[in-house]
Image (cartoon, rainbow, N blue to C red; front, side, top):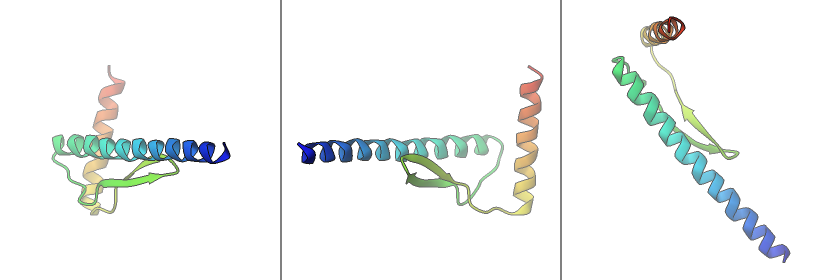
Length: 84
């Protein structure tokens, strides 16, 4: 019985890990697409894999020029949302 419980817990953990990995893939793809609409590319953007059953997106490094452009796009979007 204890063995079955441990196996069941392991299966649940593996499912949560798989769901977290998929969430990371989807979030990275969503962000990549949004950045592309603004003409921006983060070269090292990607799924960083699940950690503790949580999906993580690796943003990585970028040039200072790209960081400023990204900040401008985010600020413009935030202002547009506030004006709604």
